[in-house]
Image (tube, rainbow, N blue to C red; front, side):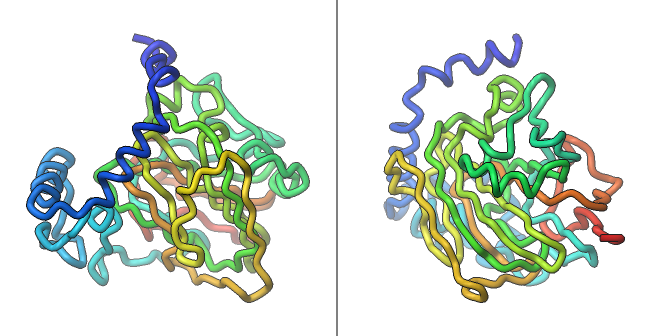
Length: 283
């Protein structure tokens, strides 16, 4: 079965209604029913609760609490590198931006302007730059951390579709990451700007950042933007910056200039928070 054919049902599924329903379920505190559901989830997806700061499944009041669980201290040591991997998950794609085109999968790409919500001037800062697209599955740790130190300048919530973001859908839906709902975070660093995009998906009930809290819902259907004064939000490498419910995808953009990705990286390779992602030596 071709990937395009495999994703056809997603075009007609009531994705927004399903996601809203999943969000209400994830927030519900149902005692033993919640604990039972979490146990089934842990078994099905082989979640390693030994890594959690709180490994007691029965102590989580809701699925939201479980999905956004913290890791125990020392579970993800940080590599000594200019850029570290910000999540647990798998590599979707990474490499050079072809002028303004980000490679998604064979036969598919999308523009940086579309990805960040239509701001062509901001997108121009990443022409011929670099990108990395990282996929978080349901079993993965769902918090996102900083690849390097940065100062937040702007956040944009871009309304959009809620297609799945699994590898099959990435191969079958054109422009997937630039058409799904997303939260775009603009940072300045010692080595120039970078963008970190949290991409929503079917059943991903909400996305949140440490400086704002829950960004969605609400889903107003219109683009929303927040600007931040210099020094208002500054985060160090490895600090948490946001979180997903269930799994989804993170896309990062970096400007043109020397960037050597970890030579061990390859599409579909499993990755862990804190491992070396790249070096920018020579900037």
